[in-house]
Each structure stands twice: as C-alpha cells, then as structure tokens.
Length: 468
Image 1: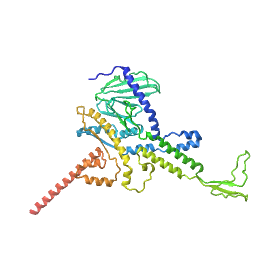
Image 2: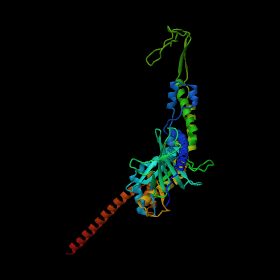
Image 3: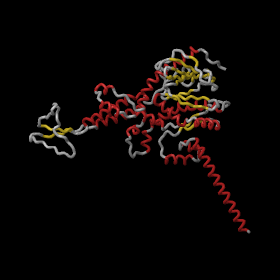
Image 4: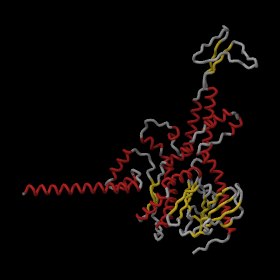
C-alpha cells in the first residue's frame, strides 16, 4: 500500500507548477471564450482612426458570432449514447450513474468547453454512501499532469482556485487526495501551501480507493509539439482562425459605415449663395420631405444628385472571408451563409464531408475519455469487477440523413442484426429509449399471443358445438 506524501514543500512545488501552467492557458482561453460569446475585440485600426461613439457603435453591430456556429456544428453531430462493457449489467449500472449525475446535460458542456478553449475536465469520486459522483470542471481551475512521454497515463491532477486573497488547491494522486490552502493575492498563488481541513475535521490527506488519478481530461485537437510539456497540448477549434473573424468583422463594419454615410443619394443645389444664420452657421437651402415641394427662385440655379455608394463589393469581400474561415475551421460554408436552397441530399452530404471527418477525429479521444470515466464509475459500483479492456463508447450517427433514408436502411438490416442494434445505429436511439421500446414490444407480442390463443379456443369450441 502506498504511503501518503508528508513533504509539504514537494506538494507546494507541484501545485505552483500546475498553477503556472493553468495561468498560461487562462490567458489564451479568455480570448477564445470572448470570441465564442460574440465579444470580439474592436480592431485597433478603428480605434486609432475614429473614436466617435457612432464608429464604436457600428463596430459593436459588426460582430458576427461565427466561432460559436463552428463549435455548435460539431457538437450537434457528436452525441454520446453510452459506454458499453462486456458485462451488460455493468453497462446498465454505469449508465444509471451517468444519468443520476446529469451527465446527459453536463457532457455536451464539457465538449463545448473543450472545442472552445482546448480542454475541460471530469472528476469522478464516491460520496459517503459509496455512490458515484461525476463533476465537470473548467480548464481555468483544473489540469492533469501526465507521465513523461505519455498523453494517457495520468500521473497527477490539480484543482487550484482563489476566493479573494485566499487560495485553495486539491491534488489528486493515484492513492491519495491532498487538500491545501494558502494566502496570496488575487494575481499570484501562495509561495507555500499548508494543510486544509474542512469544518467537520476531515483530514487534509484522503485515501483514494480507485487506485488511479480520478480526473479525466476532455481534450480537443491534440498534437505532438516540440514545446509540449507534461500537461499535454490541446487547442480550441477556431484558435488559429481569429484573424479571419476579425477580417469578417472589419468588412461588415466598413459596409455599415458606407451604408450610414453614403448609402443613399446625395442631393445638392448649385447656383445660389450659401445662407447663414445669426451665428454664422450654414443654413440648408430647403428641407426635403415626402410632402414638400422644392422651389428654386434663381433661374440659373440647378439641383444635382450624386448616386449612393454600391455595397456589392463589400458583400463579396464578406462572403469570401466567411468562406475562408469555413475552410480553415472545417465548418460547411452553408452553415454560415445559409445559401443552400432546393439542393439535393447528395450535395449536402458532399459539403458535409470535411465536418464529418472532423467529428470522427474528435470522437476517438473523446470516446477514450468517456470510457475512462465509465471505468472509474465501474470501480465504484462494482469494486470487485475486473478491468474490461473491451469497454468502449458508442456515438450517434454523425452524417445528415433523412428519415426516409434511415427507414430504408432499417428495412435492409432487419434480417441481419437485431432490431435493438438497428434503432441504435440507424435511428440514434438511446439505451433508455430502447429499454422503453423493448417493454412496449413485449406488451404488444403478449397481446398478440393472447388474441391468437383466444381465437384458437373459440375455434375449438365452434368445432365441438358443430359436432354435438
């Protein structure tokens, strides 16, 4: 049995190194989240050129939230159905714990955060009644440290947060969890940490019966980099496309400026002196309205009209910039431009090809993370169960298909695989829905059997009556 760590200096060093890495990620994450929320920064070119309220207001109106659409396009095609074990009873128990913890709603939030800033985290533990507790946490407070040369073997995890000048940390090791506290400032962590005990007197060192780090990272866009450290590398889906978003916003802003100040014909009168008021201000020669008549007394005077500015060039620039953004992030352009009208399913499917490929690429690491979560839950609900190497996550269909196509596929598969597998694979039915349908189907079969039995008995009585 492993012994708990008593060296506070060593633990403090671990926590501060993790907190430093979290701080670096927060700086990047704050920018990415501001784009996701539609709070795009106003370009410095606009600030430097014009600082009028009108310009700033137009810039706020120019923000188009394409980053959120980019994330949502992936989320709607990455629907986790369940984590499957070889033992069907274990699959059911883990699924019940998943639902009891509201993970049907929390899991999409974890994926959304991962796609936005690069990663999110799931913490699994047992309460005092030995029931599984699953919590989703943000990357601004939590991080996982991996063994050297690995992106899977979790060596430790850290949760670090502040409340005013008070700082708190929870360190997750394979066999023990440590709770620490310290005094620092709102901008810097403590240089040294001390044990933290709760009001109930619970010790700051808590045994971890799971035997492994019980924090799972949900990472997006992992890759090998020469600068990668033991905390791994991940990135938001549109992290390298912020320049495209700024370009779109600036093009929309330029169009709004043109619409505001030169988007209408300019009328003028030539040939008369410009009149002024008592303060020396120029007077308009006449007011134009729908119910007024313009009269010019000077026979030499004339009215002129200059045409309004054309917006076609702005629209072309905006559409081109949107298509560039779509190409970089892998979102079909029709998601962003809504330009598909009366097109065939084959055309849509061809346009979705890259998005489908991206979704499948994300499902591999996310499926492994979901499976690791399921295995931790399994250790709580069935402590004696052996580790199931065949456990895996199942997902809904990531392609766009009409109900007619799904029905046709179901008919073609009905003599090949069980109906439960058909409705799961073709109709994206959840395990809970399949369980309800199984009950309804059993009831229908029972009623059919009863009706057949009753008919047989009635026919037999009829035969007996005729013979008598």
